[in-house]
Length: 511
Image 1 (cartoon, rainbow, N blue to C red):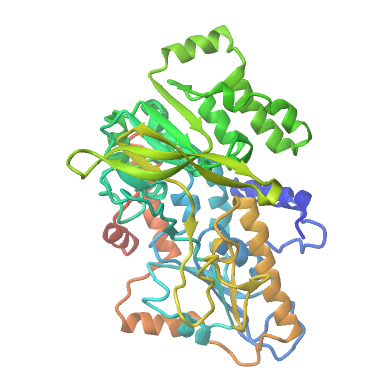
Image 2 (image 1 turned 90 degrees about the vertical axis):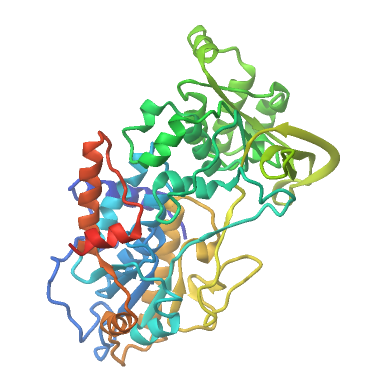
């Protein structure tokens, strides 16, 4: 069960540990549960302390994916004296904390301090540049470990599935995020920023992040860890207007008040709201939960209230603008005369039917064309199966599970987006991952997981990887990459300059 107070305390603990302090244990928590053992400390490979059976071997746990879902699950099972190995497809850890958080949100990345402390634990190891399902199979991992936790996230994008989607100038918002955050293999995306108007389809936090980065003053970005090649492209961009389009109304937007407030106050940019979209909303939201009420009130205030003299002057002097468009769904991306590039987008005007959970947007016959040269799709992500050895729901795009236990597959668990779908924030993922890890703990204690047979763990996997010529990156290897990025960033006057080439990463890691 979710306990908000305990969750907030845990998050506070994450931050405090990240800056070298310690917190008091939560009720029922062992005082030293989250403190790291010295790297290289002796590991008890004969028994799992904290579990009931005296004949149990060391619990060998493999976590596939090094984002928040993987690290939080690892933190929890480490409390029970398990040996935990975290595998990652990329040479570097931290998943969406490194590659999904906007460059101008460094405070969100503080959780990396906690994850780093976890990797310094004597019973926890990181192995990067290993693609599970290609370099090593899930079945081979199950043979090497008592427990395998799948936490590899949602790596694909939902498609628009409309005519014109393949035109030059159409991108997923995710690819833009990966481009400016330095995901290896996408540095040559080179999005076309030569137009004045961009349309973003979707009204979640990612949509607002991308909109903000596209029209932010360069002076605000150049000291962040944004990649130099994307910073150069954004500096030369001709995009002056960003329209953020949603299929439902202002009461159904998926972004948070923090993201909206940043957009409203963004230097050099003014909001373009249609007042009629917000008339009467103050009465409707009176009984809404406080977060939704505050969010809607900010939109209403921005759209309907006369700005102060200072704000009016700021908006008047702004060279760029952005706006929210509601009750619109994409029907077709319109091509230029040569049929190759984006010239605009055709939207259907929608109406809402139903209420509550049954509320749906219905397309009408009314259409609206918007001239633009850039279309970014931010309608969601989807997971995919990395093996045929476990069940996968192709409709919901998740692994069927009960409290993180993969159905009909003993010893296999899942956590994060591949478990529940691509929704929520880091706090949601933390609670979700603790739930999965607790299922592991309960299954060990109940005896439904057999620990009487010792497992070889990484030593078995290492032999297979060596045979297959896979060059892995350990956590000390990542720390070399980290030092190189910090040093490179310091020379450029930035917090960090990320390495975005796998070969370069491997070279630095193995120096």
